[in-house]
Length: 493
Image 1 (cartoon, rainbow, N blue to C red):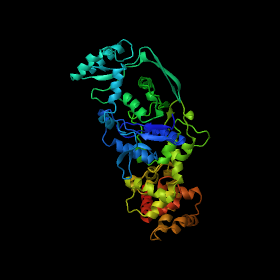
Image 2 (image 1 turned 120 degrees about the horizontal axis):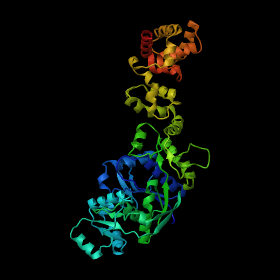
Image 3 (image 1 turned 180 degrees about the horizontal axis):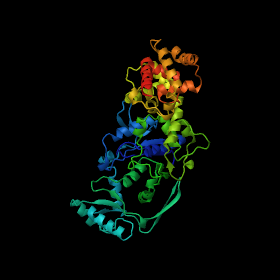
Image 4 (image 1 turned 180 degrees about the vertical axis):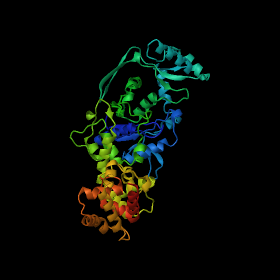
């Protein structure tokens, strides 16, 4: 087959789904592993499901993820949709306009491998309903299979609505080898005479995909498990045209926590959702690579380059892979902790603003301190507001957990709060010197030490007896905020 050529060929029917991104990733990794080419083709022949802006979203999501397109549809340096390559156009509706599919459907009809069908959708629905009632597999009953071609052509010329169907041979086994699943056989009697050209003149996926893959020199078709049952029709079309079929690789299904298909219809994740939650592209890609593929080692953290070096379909599982968000958080958290404090501060700022905790004018030094304080606990950038909100919210919005309530309800706690308030009155604002020394001074004054010292103060100020470096909280919150918080605790507990 020569140089490896793979393609990702989505439909612009909405935001890119996480399962689609994994398919794109596995195509990309195999192309990079073999030194081949990665194409992007847009399959928009189902005009009823077309969504405005979906193409741009798809391309932006792929670019965000670091999946580089060698040929086909892509974004140029100005972020505009463009096409690059010698096999274009790469958008199927544009290929329809150019008449690319016409000669191929004509060839099949003339050779008796496809036929015109004039059955209405109403008739087809009735036939299928009856087949279901009889316990049969619902499929087209072949009423138009035996129509003489000349008669059919006259009806077409007269403007009669019609489709074109594939004429599968009767009772014949069609076998193909799947790289992951092995040898797969279907009998044509269990298959439908697939519609190849719809009433609107557009080719169906099943026809266009074969013609396009052949004309674009695709050597490996890497796609989701749901296409296995359609593959015999594709294999037969290759045979009907006398073309060499590509190698087929059907990826295991991505499952949700209930072990059902992780799909758009079930409301499961769009890539856009993960971007908005503050996942890093490196983290999401690393996690998705391990969703169905396993490396030849115990390692779990990989750069894109390392993934491409190791990736092969021989290590892809046959069974479905469960999308475990906790594992994603763990993987992504690794990349968060690799960021510099400056980088993390920049990343969490829009999430803090969106949560209404800070505004654009928030001091940079405090934002960096906030990032440093919580970096070890942040798995995704949207965690930052949730983790640190008690530093910012109004005292009346605060909640103190049970351990905190217990810690601030003692006589010692009242002494500690009074002492802290006295020290606050002695400074204009909290600086590093105050933040790092005040607790030692309070210990010396009150004689209270250990957790009896730290728990009540931390609980009163932050709402919990546990948390990161407390002196950082003092600086981030500032004098007035802490003074108000301590007075609120005095009055209410």
